[in-house]
Length: 243
Image (tube, rainbow, N blue to C red; front, top):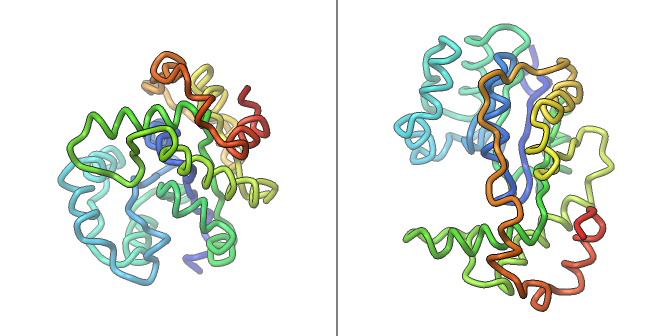
């Protein structure tokens, strides 16, 4: 088995676009094992960030997912060694993946060369909702993140950059775009499209909790947002069907 030639699943997109909710939903299907920002493929030949790995175990998402699959938590190591352990522990045919929104979207033209059978699922959300989410998080949390910003002018750069990278790779056959607004209206339809994109058919997400959060609250939170948006930002909004 050539480990790099397995059909891995990469989850990317702009932060605050629903990538975490998508991962939780996809993991309801036992044929998928999607990690939450372990950086498995980014650090394929290097040991993972110990703090990120420890957080995944102690905060429970990795422990819970492994328990749900009746396997042991893989020991700390390189992305390759952890993936190898997962491949050996999980039922044959399980698709293993990882979510690191910007890293996998921005670097997809390189990752697709190193992992020829991998596929990228990109979460796309109305840029105005992304801006509102960034500002909301900036004022809610004491810890400052690089995906949170204090105002519209600063916040729009995050989505604008992601939109530019997406337009550069969106025609690749190994990319599937999930629009947040459409996904929350019909989660089953959304995941079944993903399942067929991955080549495994309809997905079973019985018991999922994929629900709309702050779907259009940006209209009330930022009523004058349009006056601060750049022409380029508005161009990408229009390009992706956000009027």
